[in-house]
Length: 388
Length: 139
Ligand SMILES: [Zn+2]
Image 1 (tube, each protein chain N blue to C red):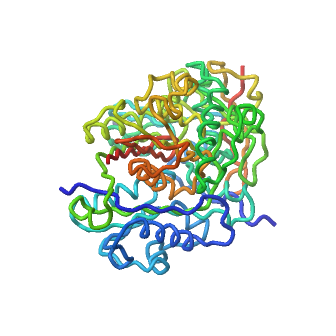
Image 2 (image 1 turned 180 degrees about the vertical axis):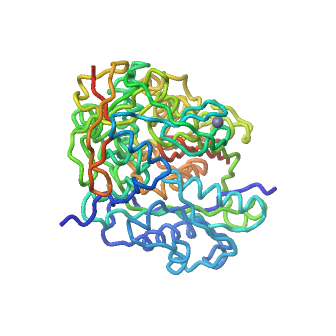
Image 3 (image 1 turned 45 degrees about the horizontal axis):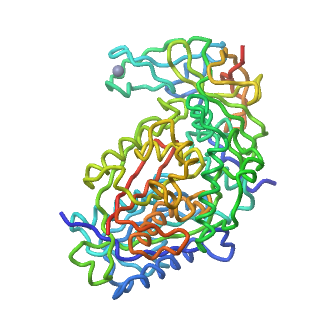
């Protein structure tokens, strides 16, 4: 089986792109990815994976792989579209990884894209995303993403004494990193008071505990180790992957609302395959769709003990100079969350870190990086481990 | 005119395989399915057991009391709903967990472990008709 390398990465700025379509955004991300490598033209790809959560509803456009191929100018002997709600991006990366690892393709383009600001209002966008929630047993109550993560927050706070201030510290740290990332949706630094004083969304979560809805696209280029040097002197290798899906999709079915059980399993698998332990990870991009999620994730990934995530953040262990800098790209909270693109953007940020290309203020001297991406109420999880 | 709301769907309450569940709500009874081979109780109800895959499922009535397992109060909801809405996951006396509205309490009135009872009321459903459903009432 082939070792798999990343040789290129690109992303659009995340935010409101009122003047660009989903395919425009995808083109711009792919252009940057191709230009980040050497000797690659669009004709060189023989694999194409598209991660997009919701074009059928946001754009009223089906047949995604064909549709995007027209605008990307791509031909491929293996092409597929991947959808798994918010973990679509990492599922796409893992699909591309498998295609390269098995020898099915030599050079694979993985593109994630979501274009939300076509619908007239934010409640229309929220209604569109409520499709991901079980229609009969949950969404009928007006449920939406903040509701489910707030359930985790309430329970974690009740059992472990995690405080609203701990949640706010996650938002403040990630915004600080985003202030050094010109591609981030929000770049203006915020304070703990800003977070605590922001309006309630789903109590105890407030506006600044929640990631924004964003437009954007990100792309990654995968090839096998033997070919990587044709495209770059500094490839980054995928050392191990771990994915886990657990049959607890309805919020009342989740066996433990103080942890991401599926992530503990996915992480164990990824560490085993990469032959490393949590303490070996130098930098991590995790799925902070809500501040509470980052706390549950650093616990489930084994960076700190269960129940101690809030304290770990408070002690600065997830900041630069701490045990494990987390979300140096700004996280979903500040960088933004164009659903299908997020996992792919995370990989691009680790690619940048491991190549020593991250700017001052968010650069980590890293040998090993990790990305974690989730779907549903954290019940579908993907972990990818990378090395220089 | 709203351009988009949570899109309607039209579950057929008259022909569904779990018609008995919906019918029982009208009589103030809350049912779940229980596998007669391995004993697993399923909620939402299912026609095949997700554990042993037997199709010998029987209906059981769920207890009417439980405790708050977790809760939140939604202030931003999709088009068509009116905030704030207090919702909870409740663990019944037999361990089954349910999700619904808490109709008589706000976020600040609740804590994990509070006792609630099951009540029934008409709710707007996706087909824009009213259907009876279960809700929670803080005791
Ligand atoms: Zn059974």
